[in-house]
Length: 319
Image 1 (cartoon, helix red, strand yellow):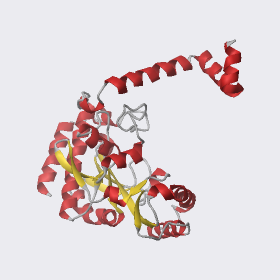
Image 2 (cartoon, rainbow, N blue to C red):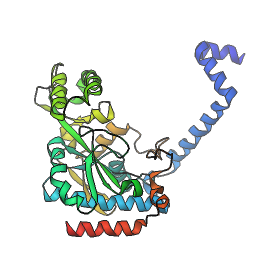
Image 3 (spheres, one colour):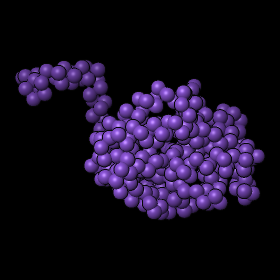
């Protein structure tokens, strides 16, 4: 009778799928996980979580924080705009610091400021062993995708990702043109993947503008959308410019750092409406090629992180 009822309510395909999951024990495991997250999100306040108790991870976070202080100081020196992004923006809003399990630092900048970072910062940082370059430590992603600022990253994990954003004129707010923008970005990404090693930065940017502007409502009008680095994300992530500027300040590990004007709206666009809930995945999202976590690099390489943190504090005082 249960089989017949299932066929009536679920159909043959879903009934077979449910049967396979049950036979493998996956269905019960999934129900247990769902129950766990129900109780976590119903009865635990995620904003009250203390900083991580993992000493290695906490030392990595504090090392990254010192590098961020240096970056922030240079941005103020040269009048460059940036803001906390991704998990670090979430951490500022939800925890007033690092998400307890986070191991990296992401910031974003308008492209006009982003393009000045390497020319202005390189000499000032290199003399202290802080390297700034395009791409990542384990990939060859170019300048259109991100800038990396690292201090002995392969041995310590201390690193900052800096992402560029572009401002696109259009005839209406993002919610009304998203389907068109999705289509335009898909066309551009297809072109980008075929030509990223062939064309230079200016040629790729020009082609992006050309592709976007051939679609209705994009590239013209009085409304402005902030578009976040599709070369890196391969998807549309954007907000209306009024949700970004003017930038505000928010507490992060005892500092006051720049964040978007409408941080909740920004986070909802980035993570979805459940950004205040406990996550199901992504806890250890930075792994070395051998599967080790970034937070254990210092231990594996015999690095005293407290000394490295002190060194970066001295660099901050000198620049």
